Image 1 (cartoon, rainbow, N blue to C red):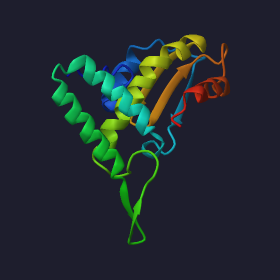
Image 2: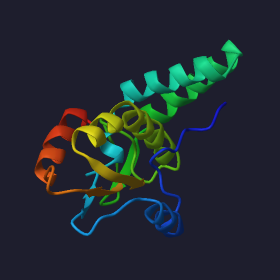
Image 3: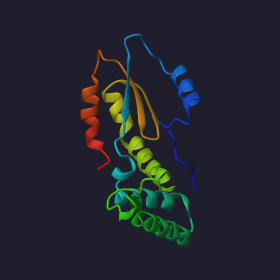
Image 4: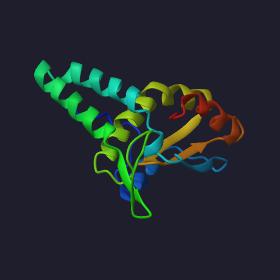
Length: 161
């Protein structure tokens, strides 16, 4: 299967520094730090399943392998158990916090969201830099052309829920 595009992902702080060195930053530019609230619990499981199924269709030639992987996905996303105050609870929405698979599944969804919408948002708002590490986002923009409230208001059209 082809790797995820990682267009906006950061591997670590060294990667961020390297990318910032290659980003034209003028003195009047502003940096904004955003956080995706409750990332795992806000990932839409059904939509993410469709995204993964399309990626498998495109990259995995064997239909039996594709079906098995989707079956695994269904099992993983339906077994959202966690403990709270020594009680086992079932999480009804999103991905399970603490599950080793949640990060990978969330990454599929976020990369699809970014590859579908970020180019439009960065052009519209003249965002010079967009960088994401897991659920933290760093934006670099010119406040003379737009403001952070316009950016966040516009991005709510692409929220996780």
